[in-house]
Length: 299
Ligand SMILES: C[S@@+](CC[C@H](N)C(=O)[O-])C[C@H]1O[C@@H](n2cnc3c(N)ncnc32)[C@H](O)[C@@H]1O
Image (cartoon, rainbow, N blue to C red; front, side, top):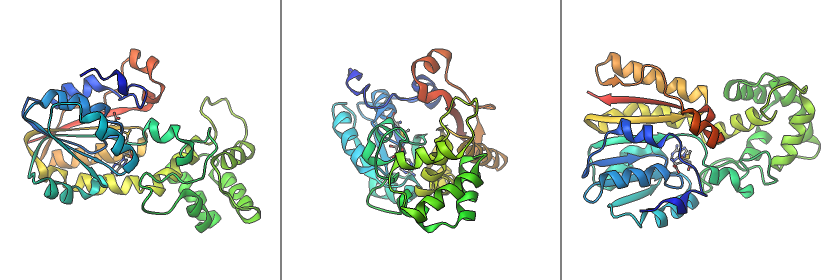
């Protein structure tokens, strides 16, 4: 299938590397835990068709519905689940599958989420301060800020954003919150721009704050930990798990869990060091710059 139709949505990261490491055969069962706009999913389905089976998960219903239309054009059986991948037991039970031949996680946000101002993920676009991947559930970034004390916000920015100016930002944000309330992405971004010294860094001063809030709103690290604690039980011997992460907090969790499982003779680590995108991809797709890919095999 020609997949150029999907290129505008979200450019999948390190596709060749993902496919090479998964080492799939026609007829196999694969679990894609972060379907997004279906970039990796479609490539995987093309490898396992016509008799394979793809189980896809995403906690963002709007995105999943778009992916479904796109993936339906591929002649490979598939089922999509609107769920958090930490609920993998329930998803596989519903799919009637006990073990799979391959697992993929491409963590973080999709360009589709970032590009839609109304989702509230982007500090460059005016939108409500939402940031929930699953809009049916949970606390928005706006309500999170309302609930926190200055000390708690400072800690959150330090821990999940590794933000150097966490104290200054927390103070400025909560002052504004008490005065007029913080409701929009640009309001928050401009406030951060004003509260920190202008450094030489090329990244926008709001980058780390938005990352921290997004991680907490979506319980991203908790989901990853819960998932990694059980996924080996659902992998056939020889099955591989490929995980792409976009910041050091995620990458550390993946690295440590792979090492722990390797010490228990459950996983063999296939990437001693994380794999990074090649120069050509780095040039072409700005989003992939921080990507790190790790792979382990069930033994
Ligand atoms: C980087 S995008 C995936 C892009 C996809 N690989 C592609 O090529 O189009 C990450 C996706 O994972 C989803 N996601 C993030 N955390 C999740 C979780 N805990 N459970 C399920 N889906 C999650 C997001 O909603 C988003 O659509």
